[in-house]
Structures are given as structure tokens and as C-alpha cells.
Image 1 (cartoon, rainbow, N blue to C red):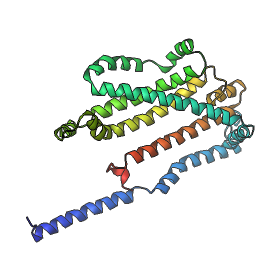
Image 2: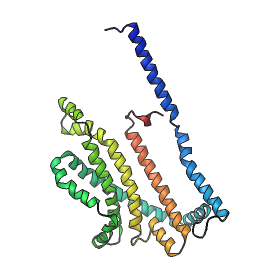
Image 3: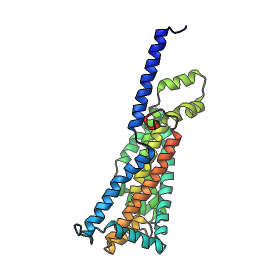
Image 4: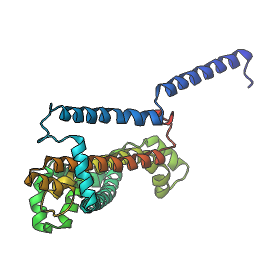
Amino acid sequence: MALTQGQQIENQKALNTAETKQKKVSKAMPSHLARVVLGLLFPALLIAGWEIGGRLELINTTLVPVPSTILATITALAADGSLWGHIGITLYRILWGFFWGTAVALVIGSFVAMSKVIEALLDPTIQAIRAIPSLAWVPLFILWLGIGEPSKVTLIALGVFFPVYLNTVGGIQSVDRKLIEVGKAYGLNTFQLVRRIILPASLPSFLIGLRSGLGLGWMFVVAAELLGASQGLGYLLVIGQNTFRPDTILASIVLFAILGKLTDFLLKKLQERALHWQDNLNGQQ
């Protein structure tokens, strides 16, 4: 049925109003470059204030070395080649722990989310284990696996497991039941339902779980490397403490922050690329 002239005018007004609102939202959101500048502004001011405070002797630089001293320590470690070994072994532990923690969490979380029986069987035990402080596992892992790489990787994987598991279960169980019913009405089998409905719908929650898991992995790697490690950024913390070198300790902390931010940045880019189909505020740039 053809629209009357009055209806066409009303529709055009509604369309113009929606476009105006979208433009206002877009203008209110900073550009990519502006966001980068804003993100660097606070650290830059903090570092500048820290350096100036140290130069003016407002800060005890013996206990809190200024950023230039920390940078000199990192440069010296890079120059003698030891820095790359510490970074390499830490990244190796993080990646292996992240891989195994994610893989196990994805498999168990999928089964728990898809079956009420398996959920009733496993979830209470997993939640009870989640409540155990992570450091409580350390003596047991050392007894079982020794002080080598397996115990460290297992500890990191344990830290990665729980956020990925929770987000996998939550993401799958939050899929709209009506979508699944529509899929069944169109004759989709179980595999097609998972691939075309459940997986896309639960992907945002799963990716958030990956970022949370990676963040916990970086926390757990410090604990792992404080225990019997002979190399790694956590080991640098111990060296700094034993030799009373706050600059070495802070250099290690700064490197943890930089590497943690870089790995999270990569996961965030993966998240944006995987969820480019979403029509949300992040897409209005």
C-alpha cells in the first residue's frame, strides 16, 4: 500500500532525527588518535611529575628511583643481553599457561553450559576449587611437578582457567532461547545450531573471558617466577630485592606493565575484528 504524503513526511522527519542523534553520538566519541593521546596523557604527566620530584629531591630516590634511572637499568639489561632472556622465558610461560588454561576451560565450560546434568555434576566442584587461594596450590604443584617449568605453567593455566570458564558458561547459557527455537524451526542440526547461533551469540562473553584470563595469567606468572625460577621478569624482582636494587624491581614491574598492556592490546584488536558485525557504540567512530 502506497504511503500518503503526510506519512512520507513523518517518516523523513523520523529518519532525520535518528541521523542527527547518531551524528551527535559520533561527535561525542573521540577519534582513535585522540583516544591514544588521552591514554598516554596521564602516564606522561605521572612520569614527568615523578622525574621532577626526584630531581628536586622531594622524593627519596634511593628507595624510589626516578624514571630515567629505571630506563637506564632497562637499557643496561638490554645491552648485556640478559633482558631478552628474561622476557622470552616469561612470555613462554604466559603463552603456554594461557593456551592450556583456555583450552581446558573452553572444553569443560562448553559441556557444562550445554548440559544441565554435567553442570550439576561439575560446576559445584569447580566453584569450590575457584575459592581456593591460588598460592595454596604452589606447595602441591612443587611436590607433584617439581620446581621446573611444568609447575609454573600449571599455576598460570589455573589462573587463566576460571575467568575463561565462567565467561564461556555464561555466554552460552545467555543465548536467547527464541533464537535456538527459530534455528530448529529452519531445520538446523546441533552442529549448525552451535556454529550459526550459539557460537556467534556467546563469542562476546568468551572474548571478554580471554582478556580477563590473560590479565590473571600475568598476575600468576609473578607468583610462579618467585618460586625457584632462575630466569624471568619475576626472577628479576627477587634479584632486585636480594641486592637492594629498587631500580631493578621497578624495571621489572614496568616491563610487566608494558608486556601485559601489549598482549591485552592484541586480544582487544582480535575482539574488535571478531565482533565487527555488532551494531553498538564502539562501532560508531
